[in-house]
Image (cartoon, rainbow, N blue to C red; front, side, top):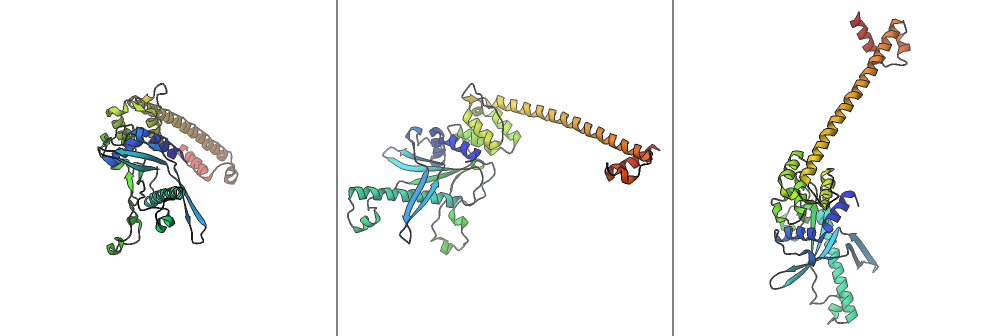
Length: 327
């Protein structure tokens, strides 16, 4: 995993932020999923099936995050499995990628049901025995959310249908579609629907290409006055900043840190300008000495061929012009 992948994984592995993400996308920001109701799931998706040759085929994939979720309402509880796929770059085949993950998970659920029935020997007829899945069996719904951490617009397909080489609706209506559940900073209009540091992070990433907009957001939004250090580190990684988290606390005043960051950048720019000027002066001085040396050689009667063994044609011509001006 790259640095961005690791940072995104660690940031969203936190149950409060994971629940916040799910509540934003699934319930318009209402706090339906509680962090305490989340349970980690094995992110390794493995599915085995029998091929034509009756040999068992294995397919193994690794998700970024996968958690078992309890959605509580007034009358009942709903159990679902939510996976998160982090994308630091746009993925032009994302619907297929997520479809495979979800299909493998459903396949694993059916296989687990078959193992249970085989152990209990409770299938009622030949059809249930052969499939290992009974008429009463139900699967746990799987939802995959794709989080895009870039500030550009997502211009990749958002469904399987968009990826197909077909435009005939009369045929397309019979092709099962698979839609992408995408969360991208530039598509979020109301960041107040987030209740954790995930909101400010995504809000800043939305303007990560505009330093003035970033500065304005950080200095005017109170959420950045006490931002979790993990959020600051996430911003650094994805926005390309180098803001130092407050190591003495668990939170950082981003407004002050941004001011320090800006002043440091200005000072560095001044120092670089000074160094560049000094270097240019040195180079100009050395160049002047070389031209003067060529002038002296010409005055002493050295041939052009001899002089060009140590100096360039351009330098020789410049020396000749300088001598003409002097005379």
